[in-house]
Amino acid sequence: MGVRLVVVDDHRLLAEALASALKLRGHRVLAAAAPASGAADLVLSRSPEVCLIGTAAPGEPGAFDAVVRIKRERPGVAVLVLGPVPNPRGIAAAFAAGASGYVRHDERIEGVERAMAKARAGEVAVAPALLQGAFAELLNPVAEPDDEGTRLLQMLTPREVEVLLRVAEGEDTRLIAAGMRIAPSTARTHVQRVLMKLGVGSRLEAAALAARTGLLDRVSHHLPGGATIPAQGSPVRRAGEEGD
Image 1 (cartoon, rainbow, N blue to C red):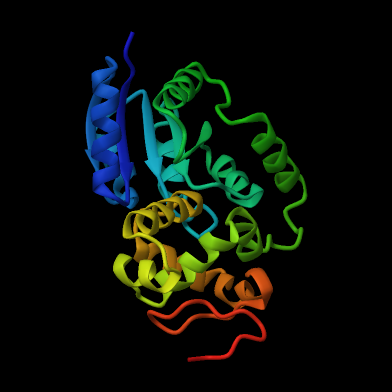
Image 2 (cartoon, rainbow, N blue to C red):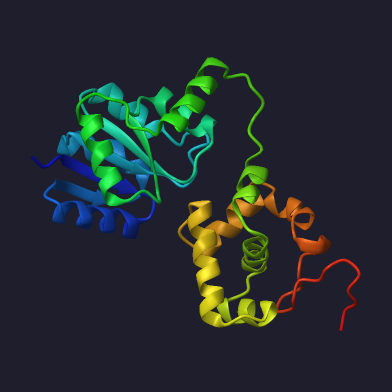
């Protein structure tokens, strides 16, 4: 039997795409909308069984204010948070707000459905490893903040780090390809992988996330051979290399 749900995300395209996929699988989507901050009003007007709320920054203050309001005014509605590769603090914040689960943005549609079924049944819908970290954070909320920039950097290959640097410099696919001496199609693939790993939907968001987390301040220590931040359109230089 299909689930009655609403899908809300800061990115309307993502909300509508997920809603369409779930409709095709027999679920009743009451609404798909943006931004996520309007989720509470939508839930109050539509009364779904499950609300899927997408967020690009689960660790940001106020990220789950809508969840708090939904659970206060419609406690019977199960709320699932859809977000990027999380740190324990972000998941802990989601559960503290009243969410029933956390699903990564790169999860397959079958995984989203399983999480919906668990949430509707009153169960916790989150991977065991993520849940363990969240519980530890809830029990020890005064722990030092996670170094998100370092954590994100560890997810990227050296080449992906270089791509992120160039994206942050404002280079388009053509300039990235020329600077790295690769085909434009290869550059485009690298960019898409970086966006997926960072859990963002655009180059602008990737650059903003890199700046906000201090990731760009760390990258020179992680590039091969002591590479430095490139000038726009130029190859990344390694230690000891001369400029043109």
